[in-house]
Image (cartoon, rainbow, N blue to C red; front, side, top):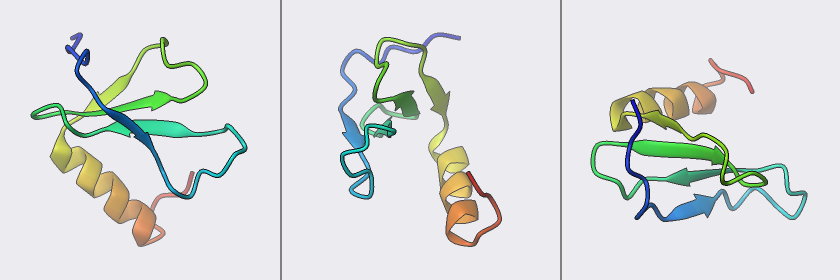
Length: 67
């Protein structure tokens, strides 16, 4: 299902640096978290619920998920 992300405000992690290999996240859309490739912003966007995003971040913080 396509979601309307037209008003999304995208941001990169402060850990990204200048390498250009970054993802951007939009969390200002009610009920959605958008994730996209910063180099190809017109490509498809992955969307997850805020709860799924929290589980993902928790997994990263506790070394359960590696990317």
